[in-house]
Length: 239
Image 1 (tube, rainbow, N blue to C red):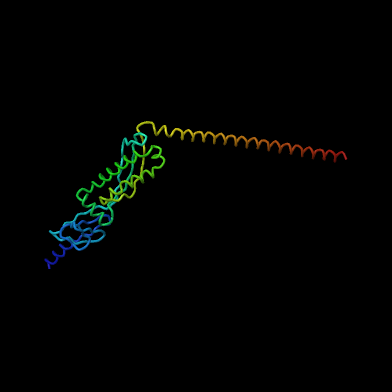
Image 2 (image 1 turned 90 degrees about the vertical axis):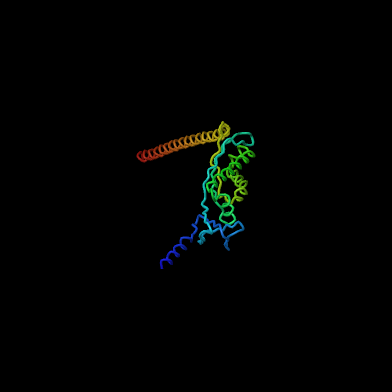
């Protein structure tokens, strides 16, 4: 009975179940499912029995990673140096081909996913900044971010990675170009505010004058009515 228990425990200990955000990479003797010529068997969302001394199991993290991408001194189309800050959400693709590609590149050093993604996005940012004016970048950050995502797609998918989102958080410069660029707009806003304030004061004054005129007219009408009543009263008394 003791031997049976030991055998059962050994079998149970070698049966592994993959979590929702991880993939198992089984290497060793070739199995019949989810295995290619590289000898890797991919297991996601289910369990697998790992043959002792014959197969080995490694885990690949499939969770989304939030990556900050910062570049400094990227030269725009006009020669203006810009600093661009962006945020990317990247993860290993959910299909077996992507998992195998990511495992071959990052399995032993999964922290390199962030490093690789940062390098790819930073290179694309610098390249695309050079094709756009500062005004184009500032006017439509979403389009700018989309161009970066499109350029990096093939490089990332080649390593089994998927770029879920990429957003531009901030664009600055070390000089005064952006500040000077915003001055005309700030002046226009100030001018509109001044005009609106003057219009509001003029409207309020017009309403005050109209109210005073209404009071004067009402008082005059009342005085005339009182005079008519007095005249009628005096006539009746005389009669």
